[in-house]
Length: 151
Image 1 (cartoon, helix red, strand yellow):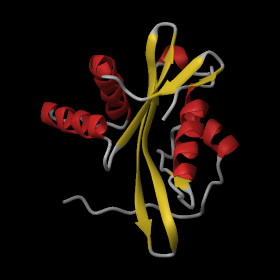
Image 2: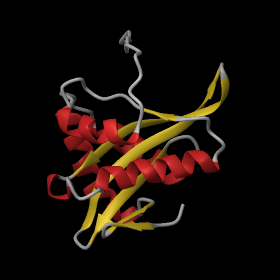
Image 3: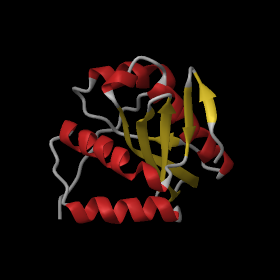
Image 4: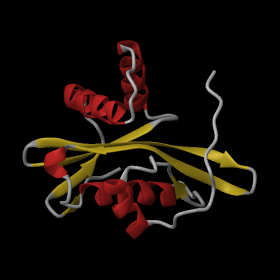
């Protein structure tokens, strides 16, 4: 994955030195959704992103450093080619409204196309109006309702 320059935002892979800023942003993401993760989960996921086999991550950088992150993975689909799930997307408050989220989504979409995925999809909170304004511009909202069983 090569860095792309979009509106003074460069999208590229996370580097080992990015760990503290990545964790700060990922903690912000989880706090937004009312979750607290144990320290070992951050360690485990960071290692998985650095390995890049099944879980993938990209970051957005500006002149100050990492200002956004996204996590995603490819998985099989029973109804056609593989698909890409964009699981997490979070930008620092100072990077919002500058095309950071859009650039991260475009980079994941480009990655998914290179992997021959049929589509990219994601979920967001119904009350996440700020993000939904962007999502409504770049993707089709589906009529599906999300259910889960926590184990």
